[in-house]
Length: 420
Picture (cartoon, rainbow, N blue to C red):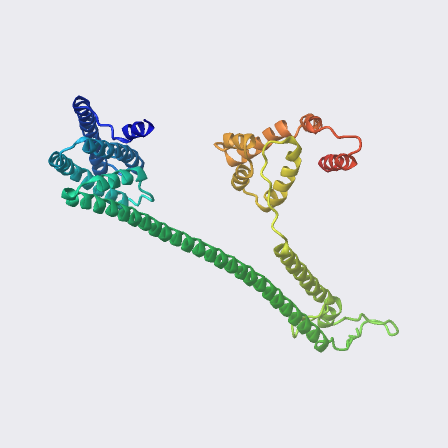
């Protein structure tokens, strides 16, 4: 009895003729509906690929197409299984493959569009490949050509996908190569500019030193020449010539007249015949001039060797105002008398509210605008009450310090001392 039941259960259950017709009609409607939907998506894909370069939009529509195409393949496979007569199955499959060719051609065109637009990865689902493989395995010998065509299409689709990925990788490598070359050229230009700047600074220093050496040599030669001339042109011994007056009584000395040439030698230390100065005062003046030139050269060299001091941009903090003003006076005001340059530099080294204040006065005359901007700065940021209020606010905003944290207290005290 048990064996009989097992035999009944092992028999294949067949649908009734009415049930078979119902399922065939249902699957046929489902397949027809999928064909219509897929045709609409195909038209949209063709329009997008011909009119736009938006890869994201094309990929989104293509993903929808792949999903519908997968459902169509599954529906066709199920409809084929319901056909019992081989002749009917072959005719239906030939009808379907005739329409499937258009879908395969569209898929090839979209893949080519992806390749031409360098899309890194093309959306292809494994479910589509599995569905096409199931149709190939379920076909009978009379459908060999259709199955072979489907297999070739799938293989071609895979190769095109791989080709597109390789092209995208090659383009990425080319872009990366160009980027690296650009970076290398930029680094080389920066190094070349640094070397050129250092060479120009070195040449300027050499010129200053050479000018100083030339000035020292000229002063030394002039000093040696003056000393030599002074030694050679010593005044001759004075010969006083007395002229006796015969009318004066004997025993009274007559008037003595000193020669004019001798007077010039005695009073002025000059020789009128040779026209050479022998005064030591002139020698001292040249020595002083040499010392002044040497001091000026040393000052220039020290100025060139100074490190470049940058001015911190003023953002409107009252605690930083005095420091900014001191830096600005030392680096800008002390080095230029032009109010146009002073106003431009003041605009350059301010940000935020101070920058807007200077911009508001920039339409005025340079001198008036500069002085008005500084006056506004002093009113807003230089007032002692405003600065004191800023320090109090900073102190109140500090975090609470624990009694055992001496280091934090010392740090705050040090910063406050430096600010004050």
